[in-house]
Image 1 (cartoon, rainbow, N blue to C red):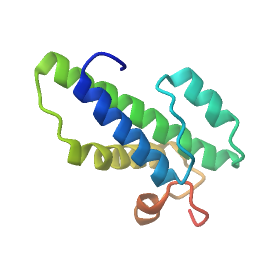
Image 2: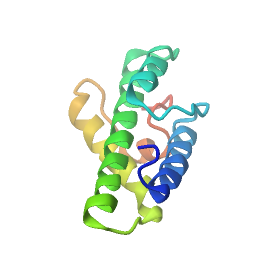
Image 3: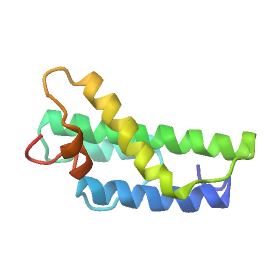
Amino acid sequence: MSGVCGGVDEVADKVWRLVFRWLQLDWVAVREPGPMFLWVDGLRLNNSKKVFVEVTICATFWYLWRLRNDIVHEARLIRKDSVFDSIREFSFTWASTRQKKVKVNWNRWLQNPIGESL
């Protein structure tokens, strides 16, 4: 998303920082999916927790790309206040339908998707 729209880049940086803080992971300044997923592969987490990180990363990339398209092609304004909340909701829905073996609790998801008590 780099260089396409200054507003989107600014929002994307803020959103990525919020996502990493929410996941309680150190900030990684990577904006491309390939390097980001290589980084996720190297995390020392069990597989179910890695799946939650991957789902959250995918949801963030997807939502930010959709936001960029809305701005560029539809001339919509950025609603900065709702972007992070929408990513959390979308990633929860995605994770809860993809992970059949692990019950995903909404309140715990809001606290931290890879928290110990999921």
